Amino acid sequence: MTWTATNSEGYAAPVALATDIVVLTVRDARLRVLTIDGPGGRRALPGGFVGAGEAPEQTARRKLREKTGLADVYLEQLATFADPGRDPRGWIPTVAHLALVPSATTPTDPGARWTKAPGRRRWAFDHEQILAAAIERLEGKLWWSNVAVGILAGAFTMTEARHVYEAIAGRAYDAATFARDLKATGLVEATGERRAEGPGRPAALYRFCDSTPRWGLGRRKRIA
Amino acid sequence: MTWTATNSEGYAAPVALATDIVVLTVRDARLRVLTIDGPGGRRALPGGFVGAGEAPEQTARRKLREKTGLADVYLEQLATFADPGRDPRGWIPTVAHLALVPSATTPTDPGARWTKAPGRRRWAFDHEQILAAAIERLEGKLWWSNVAVGILAGAFTMTEARHVYEAIAGRAYDAATFARDLKATGLVEATGERRAEGPGRPAALYRFCDSTPRWGLGRRKRIA
DNA sequence: TCAATAGTGTCTATGAGACAGTATGTG
DNA sequence: CACATACTGTCTCATAGACACTATTGA
Image 1 (cartoon, chains in turn brown, orange, red, green):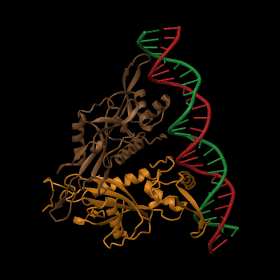
Image 2: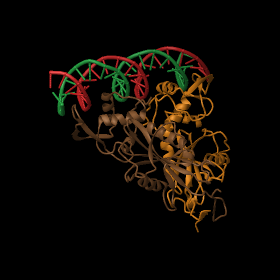
Image 3: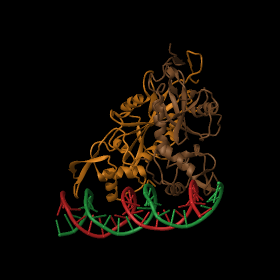
Image 4: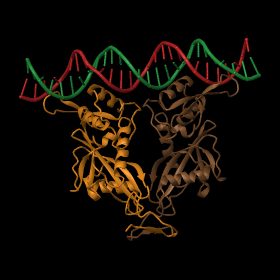
């Protein structure tokens, strides 16, 4: 039995407005997406219904806090998926969001897992399409904006940053060239600190100047 | 009196799902947006309500046909605006679209006009914000995709194309460099025809290889 | 001392801006 | 012929890839 809704003018209305969140991070040199159990043993994206008087972004942040315990997260709107029949429960458009969280994030929700992205898992609803849009957006903005600040929150070494960029771009970068070019974006600054990880010369630490979405200086970088 | 809606589970639902369309073109060397009369003498974007069983993109195409008489139009989803209170009639999220039409397009709707974008006009609702998002999207994709095919439908000379690109980018391009770089995107092809406009050597004609959204070869071009 | 990791310098290929000069039309 | 517009060739600067070389740590 599907749900229905009617407005005060007598016309059919959407049953609800949903939001789905593509939570991405880089773990073990792989891009991974946070998934929950969906119907039919398929993977699904976390999400929920937008409350009356609530902006979709607020809903997304609220759900993200419930799933990961994180309050300050890089979050941006991705696109809206509203094809008829996308949700068997009825007419439920969803405003998809892209969120990036630090590598060390552990889901607080016991049903949530990190899944390789892209991978061979079967997805519920139109979530595979939403995931594809999220990855394309992330790749496209990688060298042009500070998106990566979501994963590289706090201080990081150039080597750590490089591993994150490599997992997202799906290619290797020369270490020297990488450092030069990341500095050239004007988006990062040195903290002045250093960090030693095992043997070898300690690495200088950097941080992104802003944690809110910003565009870089318009340099180019080949992804493929 | 604001509208309301309730779904079959007893919860408040959106009153309706709307779509607004930012129809852009280049006329008289200026970027222009199609506007209709909104409340309070303000300018408004054309749009309408998404019907039950309809995808928002279909609604946008239907409305576009009513306003301009055009059936095949470059159209892509822009973003969804759903802040509470954005529409005084009630909870009405809108899926905004970006559409590009040829320069010669004349509105069939008598209330519709071409308005300079950006300009100093006052806008209804959150339409100024939607327009700003559309212009940013168009500028950002200009040299990376075939967006301009929406305006340069059919065959065009390099000079015509340059005028369109200049109006969108807000800067002048060297004619020789422009032609070289537009060809280098791999998105256009020569038709083999020529066209004479007054005195001077006739210009070769080109067309975009695809009329559906495509990405170019990843070259760069400075906008500012 | 060596191994390991971090960081610097530089050579080269390519794309983009600028512009001089050539080609081909109309009157 | 003059003039106007279209097109070609080329110089130069900036960016990105590659890689040799130096620097700084722990064992």
